[in-house]
Image (cartoon, rainbow, N blue to C red; front, side):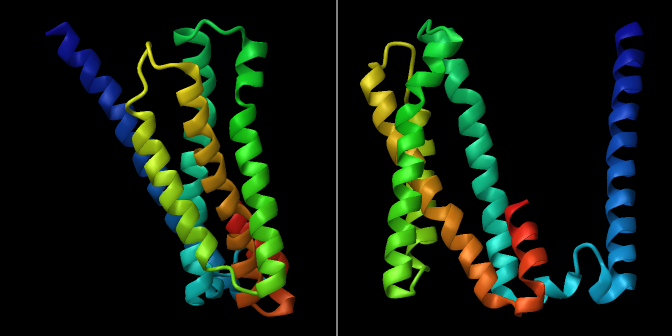
Length: 185
């Protein structure tokens, strides 16, 4: 009986946090709608399809990025026994993938003016890489893990700049700053 009361109290606090979060979010949206174009985040931006899609894609890419950047060092330290410094150095394939993907997509976009291919390819690489990561176990050779890191980094790199460029090209010059910040936030 005692455990049931403790769980109920904890679940009541969780429910309170969700209610406060939802009410706060709705209040934010109401205030932003009332402020119109002078809002911190003008809701009219999200009527532009490219801005809405790029914002949703940025959220998903951000979740994947932070998930990978949080889990991979822990895997390398706890499972592979690497020191924190060594684990950071073992993330170099991921970093190189991000750099190569960003530079390659930037170069191709500046030459061709087309950017749609990169977020699609990057999302596919991210999805496949995250799926392959779930097959990595304690006895998986480190080189295999690092190979997946490269493709994970490429997927991230193929998404960073093209999504920002898509948003910047979709809005008026007056709204570039707020559109860019909302997409990258």
